[in-house]
Length: 227
Image (cartoon, rainbow, N blue to C red):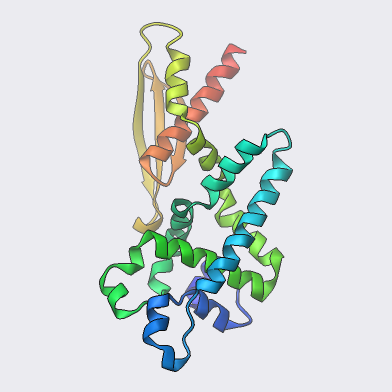
């Protein structure tokens, strides 16, 4: 778990909190005699801490954003898929304590298990180090995806297509220009060309996400030219 603490950039005073956060119910059920407790209660707490910190951040940084947009952005940031991506960055699957059946069934890669474990770990950090510790981790690992969450709420590729089609004969092409990082935390870089000229680049945790970010970059560049 020391390696995980290094990734989290936090050292637990109470190691049993982190151990509890990594204990799936399947393991707890098989090891009741040893006193093993599942991470479900921590998951419950972590969900609330994550929601509060995210809502506070969005409220303070987007004073003009209406309630509906705030809600949609928060949902995109704290959704299961987003937390699964955080779990991959942490390589969390390797540290989970799973029951034999869940282990053999591929539980270490199961999206729901990993997302729940992220919430449990955040709760453990909150209990061990206070809200400031949890907030720091949430900002670093979850809210760093705010731009991607906004992109998920808006189809920038379609918006870019509509923008360039104001003139006839425009050709948009997306090219994958790079892949970096280990398999569990790979990032992709995409360049978008308008009539063979680069107009935007973007990175993401998937090729689709990188294309959306490249389109967003292109829209900003083209709109600045127009204005």
